[in-house]
Image (cartoon, rainbow, N blue to C red; front, side, top):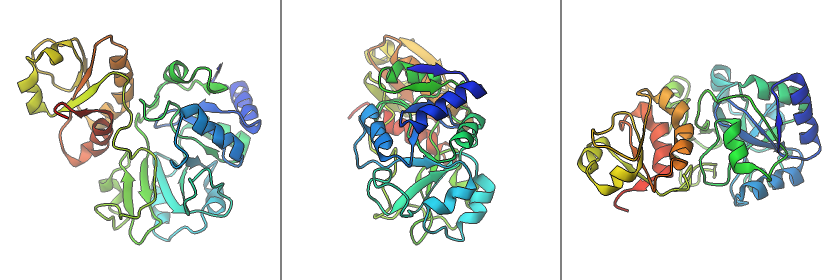
Length: 321
């Protein structure tokens, strides 16, 4: 795997590789994405092989700019435009009716497509060179911890992809919010940095997604998981379990940890934004700590923490399960 610098020369090399049908890991404001030219079905198919990703799991298409939105979506509802004006470019993915241009492999044969316009300057500069969208899920093996640095990509994807553009740590740290605008009523299909409270002034959001909502990335019950056994517990339960042998040997992630000694401790930031930015790096560190398991003390069960808790509840199972 080549390591490409975040320079004009490095971006030129990345664009050339993408045009040739190769896979290149790229930084976004959320996590590192594994990019392929979205107009080349064979290149997109390579994403599924590199990640060992099931073919029925659709991909997000990253647009070079707003001018290509109507090429990839067959219809953009009126309610989308205030949201686009406010939150694009940024960590928000819109699910819209797909145009005939969308290769079936990209959206797993569905009649919708997930579209995003990233605010990361390096990805924008790369797409300016390419002048076509890229399909780009997270640059990690399927269901494992997402990468927020180029080092994470190199550690997990060596030998599977052509290159990674090193853009430093990702600012947001968790995957984009996915907002479904293809149905009768808008709904959040995956929580992220753009929260329901932020969207509420612009949309009449459904509280839950419709049963027939489109399939989207990141919604499996088990996802974002370390290799080591990983368990979650609420703060009150952590106090009760702190004397367990498991706690004393575990790698622990917590905002406020019980006083009892554990095998390895990472104190997490006390704000949702700070926690999200640090989350995947902390999980990678815990997985590599040498401890036999990872225990995560969940942050508060409050709306502001919804996206972080969503990722943790998929990465970890209950202690009693």
